[in-house]
Each structure stands twice: as structure tokens, then as C-alpha cells.
Length: 420
Image 1 (tube, rainbow, N blue to C red):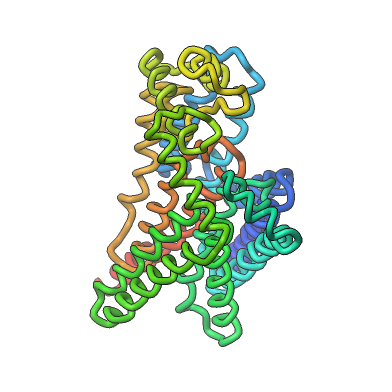
Image 2 (image 1 turned 60 degrees about the vertical axis):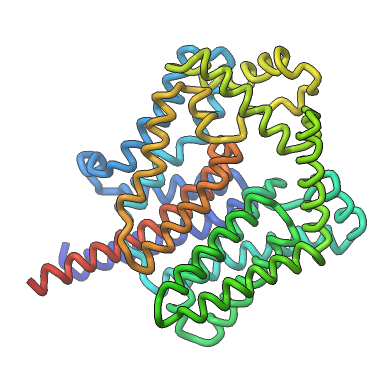
């Protein structure tokens, strides 16, 4: 194969990868099957022609394989094989996407522009979908926030994943904004970013809001520490905090959400252990999970037995809760330990932390670090990697920005070699 045909092949495979990514984003909102098939296409395209020996050089992927393998192995002491199979199936992207991203050709600025347009357009569709309900009956949906009922969302009503997606899209938009060359693209990216920020406050999903404010504060501090943007960073930080204050006062959905949260704290202090309050329900799931982990520290209860074991423990410690309020622990670290034991949790912690060792002290490194911190939020308060949509959001945004970061580091290394 001559050089030109080789380059053409790399371009072709890069375009196929981008096509698969756009289909993943669309499938995330529209079809689980489309999402799964797009992941498979991306994986096959990325690994085509790559010798398996090369795979084992990817240490982060190997760590992921190790902790996911514990889920599969736990099938030997799981009784509910259907539940075990579901827990394992949603982990398959950990075996495909990281290694496929590692061998996918770098994406050009034009391809990143296409990705940006696709991501923002699909999320705008999701925003329009949710707002259509609010506009159709504002009194009903605003009142629902008094009882922790949020607006309907895509995908499949998962408001936590949707809010997190918008917050992560804000990060990408801010990162990519300096690379927008034409006025229309700049205007589009800026407008959609503002829409997502407003929508996050209207939706009032706390996971997404916490991630957004973590980014906003971190980015403003980052800008304030640089001489060239010090006043801009300070001004943006003050402006964002003021805007957040007024949003809490005048956005009715957010206001009702905060009132419900404050009432939940009062109920908790009064000893009201009721699953009617989501945060109290989380606390009870943590308490029960820790007790079960102490009983089964090395191999866990089995990934297939997690729900049944938790329900049985609720019978012992919180029998007043109805079946629908009996949860697996709303913390991904505890979930891994519960299902597969503390050794699996340690492998999972190592996998979560590993990308931090790859960060360089530059702009892209900062954005990756803040994105990593934002994605730590749902790991602490949700079993986010036990559902397909959560796995996709966590993996995709991490891998997308990590790939750009590593590409820049490789280019810098090549340039340094040429100089020396």
C-alpha cells in the first residue's frame, strides 16, 4: 500500500469513527439498540488490523477489564442469573470503547466541529422535549417539584443522565470555543451553552447542577490565576454566583426543588426514615450496603444477588419501606464492593484514578481534570455505571477528551524529538 492510499485509509477510518460517534449520540436519545450497534461499529473500526499484543500496552483498559471481570466471575455465587446477566451486559462498553478510542486516528478540527454540532443539536432536541411538557401544563409540573418529581426527559426519563450530559456539553463547548473560526459557529456554540445552563436550572436535577457549578467555579479560578485573564475569571465567578442566587429565587422549579431538599433535611434530623425522600433513601441504601459488605468483604454477595440481598436487608433494618423504595446503594463504589467484594472495589478505584496520571499542566489538561471531577459526582451519589445510559455518558466524554489530550501530548513529544 503506497503512502497516499494509507493516509486515505486512515482518513476513511477516522470518518467511520466519527459517523459511529454521531450515531451513538443520536442513539443515546432515541434507541438503545442504535446506541449498542454504534458502539460495536466504533469498536470494530478502531481495532481492525490492530494486533491483540498491542491491546495489552493500554494499562487503563486492562484495569477496566480487571474490575469488570469480577462482575462476570461473581456469576459463580449469584443465584439470580437474569439480574447478573443484565449487570454484565451494561459493562461490555468498558471492554470495547477504551481500547477502540486508543487506536482510533486523531480527529481533525473539522471533525471536532461536526461532533460539536451533532452533540449540541441532539441536546437541544432533548431540551425542547422537556420544555414541551412544562409549557403544556406549567402549574402541574412546577407543583411536582414539591414532591421531587422532575420534568420528563430523554433518554427514557433519566433526568440525572440528561442533566449530566448538558453539564458535560457545556465543558466541551467552552473548551472548543477558541477553535471556532467562523462567526456563525461561535454564535451557535455560545447560544447553546447558555441554553444548557438555563435548562439545568429549570430541570433542577442536582447531579447536573453540582457538576455545572463545579466546572464554573473551577474554570473561573483557573482563568483568575492567569495574568492575562485574571479580571475576566474573577468577573465570571462573581457573575455566575449572582446568577445562581437569582435562579434559586426566581426559577420556580429550582425553588421548589431546594425547598423539598431543605424539608428532607428537617425530616432526617427528626429521625423520619422514609423512602419518600430521595436523600434519606440514599442514606439508608449506604447504611445497608456497608453492613452487607462487612458480612461479605472479599467476594461480595454476587452481582446477580445485589438487589435481592438489599431487599432482604431492608426487611431486617427498614421493614417499613415498600418494595419499590428498596434500592441498591446509590454510590458506584459501594455497588462494586457489594456485588464483587472489596478487591474489586480497589481495582475500580485504581481504574477511576488512573487517567489523572496522564494529565499535563496545560489548558487541555485542566479541562480533562475538571471533567473528571464532574464525573466523580454521579459516582458518589448514583449507581450510574449500572445502567447503559450512565455507562455511555461516563465513558464517552472521558474518552473523547482524553483522546484529544493524549494526541496533543504525542504531537508535543514528536516536535521535541525533531528539535533535539
